[in-house]
Amino acid sequence: MSKLYFVVGSQDLYGDECLRQVAEDAKSMAEFFNKNLSNITVEVLPTVVNSETCISDMRKVNVDDDCIGVMTWMHTFSPAKMWIKGLQELRKPLLHLHTQANEKLPYDKIDMDFMNLNQAAHGDREYGFILARLKVLHHVVAGFYQHKNVLEKISRFIDVARAINFSRHLKVASFGNNMREVAVTDGDRVESQIRFGWECNYFALGDLVREINNVTPAEIDKKMEEYTSKYTMKTSNIEAVKEQAKYEVGIEKFLSARKLGAFADTFQDLHGLKQLPGIAAQNLMGKGIGFGPEGDYKISALSAVLMNMSQGRKGATGFIEDYTYDLTEGKELELASHMLEVPVNFAASKPEIDVLPLGIGGKEDPARLIFDGVEGDGIQVTLVDMGTHFRIICADIELVKQPLPMPNLPVARIMYRHKPNFEIGTAAWCYAGGAHHSVVSTALTREDIALFAKLTGTELICIGDDTTPEKLEEMAVKYYK
Ligand code: MN
Picture 1 (cartoon, rainbow, N blue to C red):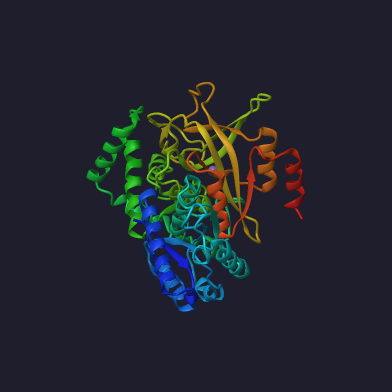
Picture 2 (picture 1 turned 60 degrees about the horizontal axis):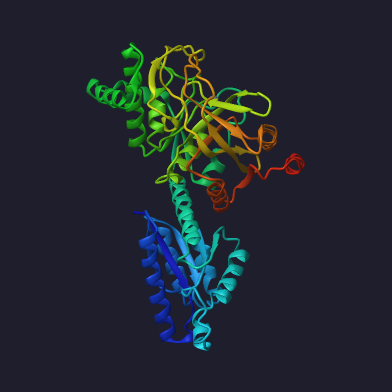
C-alpha cells in the first residue's frame, strides 16, 4: 500500500514534556488518518527539532519507493531555518496541513503552556514563509484535521501525489513517429521527462511485430475467451478478431518486459501488421495502459497518469478525440470518438465487436469495439507544448446520451455538452491552443487537475461555467502577449 509520511515540526525550547506531547498527538492523528483515509498508510517520522532531523526525515521520504509524498504540520513554533536544507532535498509532493490537535479553544482552562504547545497559527506561518521563499511547490490544506472537508482534501492530495509518483516512473514507447505534418501532437520529450518524469523512447515496430508473431495459438484463444466473455461478437470474421487478440497479447508482453506503461502508434507505420490495432488498444486502455494514436506520446502518457489518478473512484477516464458537432442552435453537442481506438472504459453498455473497413492506412479491415458512451459531469484535459513551456487545458463538460441512434457509425463514441456553452467553451479551447486529442474523465474534477498542475509547476487554463465572455476576451489577449 502507498505510504504518506507525516512530519511534525517543533523545537526543544519548550522542554521534553512538550515534545513528548507533540509526538503523542502526531501518533494519534496518524491513527485517525489510517482509520479514515483509504488506500494509504500514514506514518509519523521523528519530530523536526533541528536541521538534522529535517534532513533525515526528508531523505527517508525520498528513498522510500512506497512513499508518495509527505504531509507537514507545525504543532508548535518550529524555526524555519531548520527546514531549509531538508526541504531543499525533498523530491516528492508536499502537503502543508494547517491544523491543530485541538478543535476548540478551552476558554476556561487555557494557559501559557497550552498556548505554547498549540500554536500552529504561529508556527505554520513561519513555515509557510520558508516554503514561499524557497519556492517549494506544495499544497496547503487548512482546517481541523478531523473535519470531513479536510479529509476530502487530503484524500485528493493522495490521489494526485500517487499519480505524480506514477508519472515520474512512467516509460512510454513510441512505435513509429509523430503523424506527418501534425503539430499539436508533437512535443519536447526532454522537457517531458524533466517536468513529468516520462521516459519517452522509440522502439522499432519490427521488434514489436516479432513479439506479436511469437504469440501462441493458446494465448490467442485465451484472449478470445476474454473478448467473448466481456463483449458481444457481432462479426462472423473471427480471424480478423483473432489478429487483434494476437496484437494485444504481443503488445502487452512487449510493454511489461520493458516496464512500459504507455505506448503510441501510427497508422502511417504499420509494417508487418495486417490491421491497425483496434480492440487491442481499446482493451489495453481498459487496463490502465496509456495510449496515443498518430504518434501522440503526450496524450498516451497523460492518459496513463490520469487513469492512475482516478483509481478507486467511480467514473470513466480515457483518451478521446474531438471529432464533429451537432450545431443545433442552443443545443450544441460534440461527438467525440476516434478512427478506432476509443477506450472501452467509456462503454455505457456491453460493447459489440465488429470488423469493418477503415478508410485510412491502406490495411485490412480492423476489428474494433463499438459502443455508446457514459453520461455525467466530467472534464476534458489536454497537454500542449508551447515551445517555452507545457500548458494543461481543462474544460468542464457534461457527457450526455446520444440523442438518436447512429447505426452507420462504425466506431465507439461519447457525446458531450460544453460549458458554459458551445460558443464560449469551444472558443476558449481554441484560444488556449487546446489539442484535438484529450483525456475525458467523469471520475476526476478540475480540482484534481489544478492540483496536478500546481504540484508539477505546469501552466493551467480552466474553462467552465466561470468562463464569462469578458474572461474569454481576456484570454484571447493575455495568452498572445
Ligand atoms: Mn487522432
